[in-house]
Length: 433
Image (cartoon, rainbow, N blue to C red; front, side):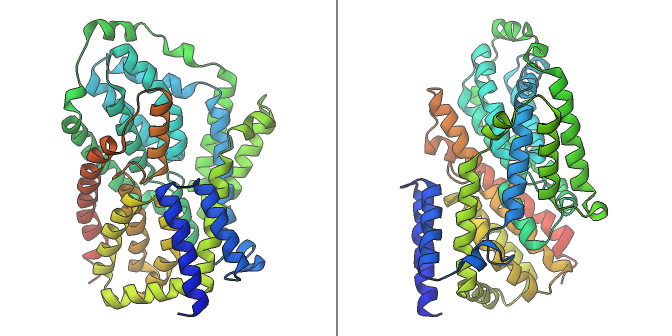
């Protein structure tokens, strides 16, 4: 590698270390790293802002923006509070039944929305329900964070790393749905079984408390019915457009922005209210990250790394898939899976080309997605949803420590990744010999 490539790599690793250790805010680390990359001419304005291969991926940024606006409007209706109270009543106050229903709701919602938004909406209500039933809230919050990461694996919009993978690999909403949704259904069932064992001490039934929760009227949680139906209608249309991408030929980012625009224009929600729910720091963080990764591509660092991986695996598709699956899970346990996937996507693109291009080699994208998404469950800093849940817990004066989360997360990650291996082998690798 050239001297500039080595300097670029050092800048990236320093920024990455700051993101991972949270010594400074991750937005500051990403923007600072991007600024240095531009300063040393590792990349330029043209490559950083306009290139499809080495610039900011505006499809990712705008897809997230559109979905955040839609969810922000949906939040105003109270539908998520309705679902949580409904689940508690359907469980009849039984602690494990309640956890099962919350896991299913969270995993399902995370497949349609992004997992960070889902836990932001579900977690506060969990405090209410657990307080009414005299249950420790930590196991339920931890289970919801993990369920959101598992459920989000199923679709293109479910987890931010999937959006990056879809954009880089040219994969559609239907590609994710058909390849990963069947696996996710199995993993959710396995996860529920694990929760029965891992959190068994938390499932203490209090009959008198159960009677109180049964007295709640979930319909009272709905604050604006007309807005609810309007929001659900737009969301259904957006999801349908995602599925019909092969026919309509509209990019997911365009669909999300159109849906957000229609919702804001056609309802009484003001533009200020809709935009207030947008997580601008997340979008800015992505932009800075894309610039840094683009600099690695520009200076040849990504190409060098992908060549080394091909040398190690000998271009063998089966070995490369397993290395990518387990390696992604391991690294995502240590650092946030968003910057990891942003870094690995161009490498995997090279590996796909080196191992045959389209067809069987597409399994490498699925290995990256599953490994990164499931690996995010391993530690408290492995995924953005985990960090959000811990923040909510601390805000409500019931802090969850790093190790309290991680001791459960390591078990869940190992079991779910191990359970994914037969799926990969039977569906993709057995016929690729």
